[in-house]
Amino acid sequence: MKTPQTLATDTERHLSTRAGWQEFTQDPPTPPVLLSAGEYAALGDADRAHYDEVRLDHHARLRVVATSTVRHTVTSGRRLILLNRHAISARRGLMVSGPAGTGKTIAITQLGLAHELSDTARHPDSPDRIPVLYVTVPPAATPRMIAAEFARFLGLPTTRQFNITDIIEAVVGVCTKARTGLVLVDELHNISLTTRHGAEVADTLKYFSERIPATFIYAGIDIEHSTLLSGTRGAQIAGRFTLIPSHPFPYNNEWKGLVRTLESTLLLHQHEPGTLAKLDRFLHDQTGGMIGALSHQIRGAAIDAILDGSEKITKRGLQAIPLDAAAQFSRPLPATTDR
Image 1: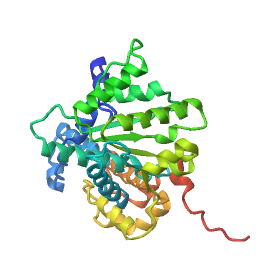
Image 2: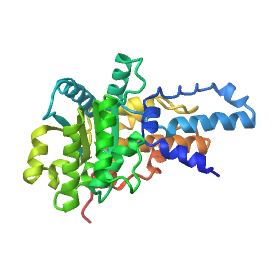
Image 3: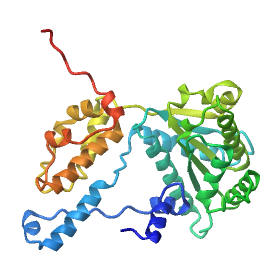
C-alpha cells in the first residue's frame, strides 16, 4: 500500500510540475540486457521474477519515435524560439492540432526537452533557470484555474488569499527572472470561445504571452475546426500562431519504419526479429495509423508475452490487446459479400 509520502511523490512526477518535468528531461534508464536461453534458465525463482519485472517495466515505458510530426514540431519550435529571442511583443507561436492519439503531446514535449537540454548546455552554471513551463488546460477552465496551473508548475502558492492578479504577477515575475523561454500549453481544445469563461481563459493566455518573454506552443484536438480561431479573439490567435497538423499515418515507408523501430526495442526470448515488420499492414489496419495505438498494442502484447511465458508476439497476441475507440473507429470496414 502506498504511503501518503509516496502518493505525493507520484503526484509531483506529473509533467505539469517542475519536479515532474525535470525527471522527464533526465536520461532514460538503460534497457536491461536480454539474457541468453541458458542464462535465463539458470536463474533462481527470485532472480527470474526480478529480471521479468525489469523487462515488464521496460515495455511499459512509452518509446518516443522521431516521427515526421515530432521532427517538424521540434525544428519549427526551435526556429521560433530564436526568432522571438529579441522580440518585445507580438511573438509568434505554434499550434499542433489533430485527432486524438496522433502524437501531439509527444511532439510538443520533445520540443520542450530539446530546448531544456540546449538551454542547460548553454548555461551549465545557472541552476535557477526554468527554460520550459508545461501546463494543461483543465476542463471547464476559468481564468483563475489556468493561472493556478502556471503557478503549480512553478511551485507558487494558489490559496484563496491570492486573487488572480496576485497569481499572474507572481508567475510573470518568476518566469522573467528564471529566463523561461518556452511555454507549452496542452489540451487547448478545453477552451471554447462561445462561453464567457472560455473567452476569458483565452484572454488570460494572451496576457501571459505578452508579459512572459517566451515562445508559446499550443496543442489540442482539431483546434482549427473549433471556436478557438473564430471571431476577433480567434483572429488574433490565428494571426500569431503557425499550425502544424498531426494526423494518422498512411501505410507508407514511414509507417513501416515506425513498426521496425518499435520492434527493435523488444526484449523477448522467443521473438523472431522481423515478425512485426511482416505484420506492418495488419498493424496499420488494426490501429488506423494512430501512433499512440500502435505503441500501445505492441507494448501490451510484449507484456502479455512475458506474463504468459510465450516470450514472443504473434498476430493473435496483438489482436488480444484492446485499443482505444478512436483507433477502432478509424479501421477500414471489413469486406462484405452479397448473399
